[in-house]
Length: 399
Length: 41
Image (cartoon, rainbow over all chains, first blue to last red; front, side, top):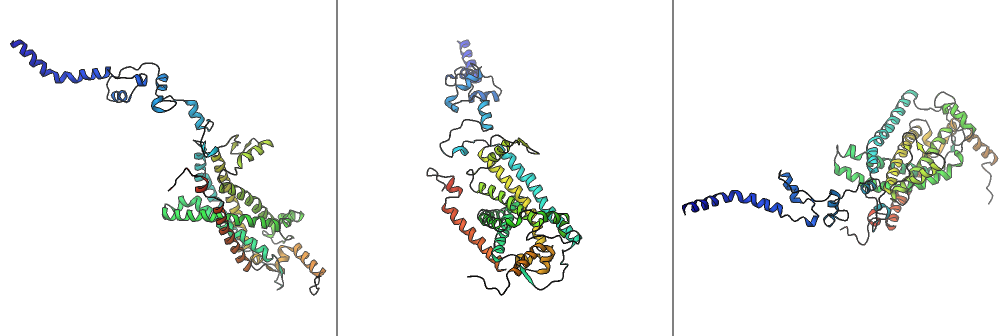
């Protein structure tokens, strides 16, 4: 009796220590993995992390994963490298209910290269180009000084540009300066304004820049067309330009090479404005209406059709582009060409203001002294004088 | 100087005009990237 009593006491005393272990073994043995095909469950994962033994899985990993479809979607937990690769490189067969081709691109890794280019080389070398141009002009001004009028002023003037021509010039100039400043603020604001002034101020500037840039762009395009129509004919290169360039336009040295209405240097400026400004306008319109007017794949196809397969620095031309990539290329091209044109226009502003005596009058009042016309546009002056002789001033025009 | 002012006036007229014209055409991202099934506010 006493013996039986001692056994009972011992069992009761040891029961609390042995019960959890037995219960755990029972739990592990009774886990129902039929729903997952024997694959591991969250309990398994947690148990393994605690360093506990986990019951072996049944079946191979792939089949176990596929059986997870009920939990994780159509592919379950299976890794499908081909699918992810297709998504990564934009070749996956994606169906979207709205948004079209643009929305079917789930990953667009080219965006990263564009972002790095925009914040890196574009901003860096673009900034250097503008600062370098200003520095060169300053050096030139110090060394050469102002291009002075060598002939004595006559007091008689000739009309260099009519009112309509000057208005179109200032429309083009004003819009270009506004577009240039707002474009630079958009590119450099985050680098130079946000950290040193404030993010709020930068955000306000960016918002204003966006409105100005998007809408003033149309004024620039209108003026560009007007200027091309007015002056395109006068800017066709001819033989006098060769002499003009051979004598460096009289800017270096003391000669005054003959020129018609526009000299060789002005023709360079004119065609730069028309071609680069035209290109900026096209890429700008492409950016203003995102995805509606993609230009680059068409351009690359055109280049390939004439045998150009790759470009220096860039490498082989792409054969397929995501819609977003088209926009990134348009932005990069827009900015690159704009930087080049800004540098050219800075030089133009220099020579048309402080760089040359009497040059501003041509676009200010439109009237230039005959001495200035003789020095810089002798052939044009001769043409005007010949016309004047052919039609005396007191002649009455035919009604 | 008068021609310069004329040019700048044309700049303002064209820019303001284009702003309203583009709004009429449904140019904004809100108009183009949204639809009846999307509620932004």
